[in-house]
Length: 570
Image 1 (tube, rainbow, N blue to C red):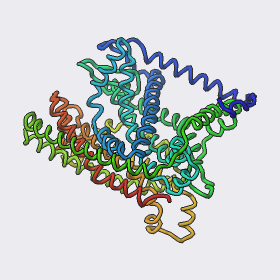
Image 2 (image 1 turned 180 degrees about the vertical axis):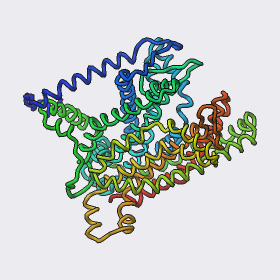
Image 3 (image 1 turned 30 degrees about the horizontal axis):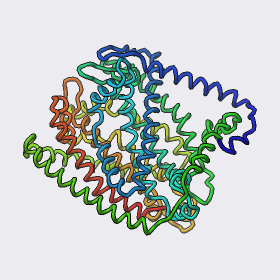
Image 4 (image 1 turned 135 degrees about the horizontal axis):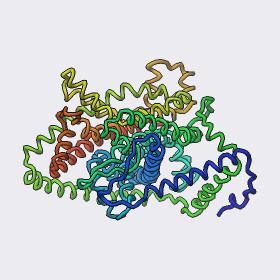
């Protein structure tokens, strides 16, 4: 394939290879066996046995992790392609970024039953369709955050590095893999860990669903928890939470911690840091002989891809003329589409809903939006200082990493009954005290994004600030806050979208015969879903998407542009 591959000497395995190779082969065997078990024959209405035995937890945990890892791989492919196109094509950016705002605001779990029906139609008589629907639900919880993170990083690559890439005549393929992706790696990695943890809420909720009046439970931690709740078995719930802790520690130790240690070399700095993150798994793999030779395969593929890509050709004048013509056509198409959409809405809304109901739903959206804005602001006040403090200390970040992942992965809906009991017992205001439930699962996006941004602050800039005598608030104002600002915007956008999504389940909470309903757009959609009012569901989701787009375009994306112009590591 390449000269690098032809020159490889025949490696002689060492003692570490004799340990690593059987483990790798065993891992492939376990994954293949679990994959066959996840594709067993299945018909809608068939009951799959869900055991609450502690001995069933290892297999259930394996199935859940495989679904989450499959969704993570799909999310990564989606992120790399979607974010690159949005960051490098000015017309695609104006379409793809608002579409991403809509995608993260749509309550996917409300449409999961429709998704299951579609996937089951593709794979009749097999459980594969249900498995793919669960993976799709987890994908929707992971992809948007990762995409926003990579998009933000691609828009804030330092200008001197861009000029160096132009000087060396790197084509788009080389520029992305040699410059842009390495620069974005710290933030993308921490947001990927957050997405993996945030996916637990969706996988727990999607492994036990109702389709066409039939309850569908696929083996996994989520169906185990659903069965334990139905049986009121607190011991089984405790075992499931314990299994989640073990699983998070394992994939943190075996997957994320080695990647964090490996990605530290991409940190943008001129001086070496003596406090770099370490991983015993990565150190072990680096000391093997046979496994290290596999690194030559992607290197050979990379060299082949570079040779196949065209050379850079600079045509600034022609490009400027093309942009002017493209701008004219693009804005003309946008104006025509906007006029058509307004005319259609003016016909549909009064006919199908009536203006009083539309105005009422818009008012409910304002109430929920105010809650979201306040909650994200409070989360920023708490987690930005904590995230900076943790991100600047790699050893502390490595110690906090699994704890933060567990807190982010903990299904916040398990705490809903506790809030119901407290609100009822103390006669508290439902609209105020159910609001924190909206942010419990998504506030961790702010923390993880800030930690990733703080860890990417170059060590030489910190040393320069120390030499200049910057202390206290001046240090935060001149270095720390500007350094984490782009990452905070990414976390705030995702936390805001997650809070909007969570409002559907957080504004209507119940425990036993007690049900509390808060005033807001989330409770409107939740009640419409329970009563099967499809038109009202569409109206509520449309209004939610409208508010998310307006807030993102008027606030968050303006701050994005500010970060791209002024808050850069240039």
